[in-house]
Amino acid sequence: MEEIEVPRLDELREQKTRTFERRVALTTSIYAMILAVTSLGGNNATKEMLLAQQKASDQWAFYQAKSIKEHQTRGHRNQLELALEERGSNPSAVPRTRTESAIAQGLDEEKRYHAEEEEIQREAKEWEKERDRNQRKDAYFDFAEVLLQIAIVMASVSILADTPAVFHLSLILAAAGGLLSINGYWVLVKIPLLLSGH
Image (cartoon, rainbow, N blue to C red):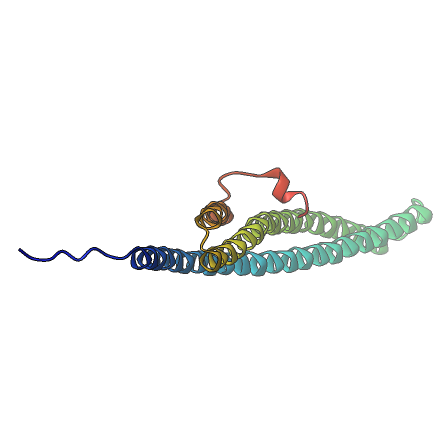
């Protein structure tokens, strides 16, 4: 009959500790991977937000330039109309025709500038919507990064303290961070509390 070797209690504890440490180490590497993807999403959202803000600012500057041109054209047209009115019904036919033609041309330019302003304004508002959308996304990524970083620290502490409860808390925080990261990419759910500062 063979002799059966029964493991010693301290060997069993050591084996259990190593298994726990491996599980936590593997889980922590998954946390780090999720954190990397979250950071990428946050960086992209920030870049897109800044780009959209720049594009919106450019459009509003262009709008302002068109508006100034429209007002200058209107002012010039008003001066011509006033000059024509002051001449009365006696002015020579040639200057009157030229003045009326300049007035009509000024009115056409005003209409063109106004139509261009409306299109520019529409584009500027679209860029502002894009900026706001990316700003909302960035908030989710920010909070997700914080939760994932805390989860990584807590998982490390759980190994040092040999405390599964701390590890379980890190799982909860990492899950919340992962969900916020997913929400950052697709904004499936709007969470007002997270958006209040943005």
